[in-house]
Image (tube, rainbow, N blue to C red; front, side, top):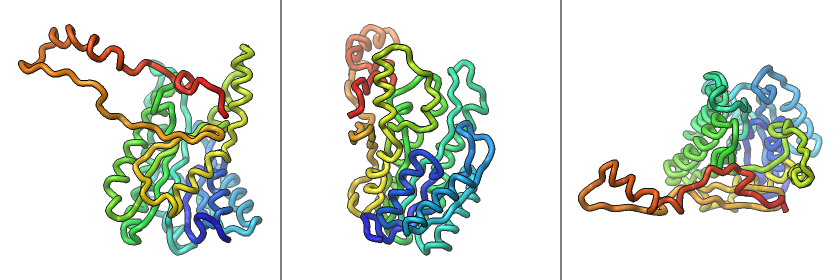
Length: 305
């Protein structure tokens, strides 16, 4: 099957539904063999179901593609190694990893339990590390490979009731950057996408009463998970050579490149600083440049186009 990733093998986690499913299907459409990883949990991480992963594999095969299902939890390092082994045993190599799997436990911070915190971190951040680490030696030996990780504007910008999710997603940004730096000598790339898409992760949002918000919600529902896939497939292809350590966003038909933290202002005092001296100068020097407490909806205030 011809395509931009023809002949490559991609592992996609959380590929049974939503964004992961869209990426898996387009990877296959563009010629890749796909390991469809999905444990089939609820949005909150409860239970298991082999159905979603199996259905995506069936759909890929029905269109002439190659795919195999994996239903192991990526929170266990040994499972990540087993998923990689499945890919090697089935297809002979691995070229692309898409770390997409995740759960949500949204709750205001002062009510967040330790389990709410650790479970979300475990799936998103530890799971991404486990899968990435299981492939690192293979990518090094073959002197090629592409990592793609899903971050979120909940971490890059902020959102209410998602301290756990935001921390995990910002941690993934750091993980991706670290991988990009460490693996560059082996021609291995690592990038992030912050996706805007209407999936089960956000379809529980209450129906707004304000007409303006209703219109915005309707526009938001047009941002289907499949619209994330083209950028994901491109970043996994050889055409993306030289693109690494970056953070992209996709919102309907828009693609963004995000900046990354760098110093923007400085203060100097030759005799050194005291708390009182800082109090006298900091707000005046840095005040206009302090990042406001905004949410994603404040920064992306216009309707999707």
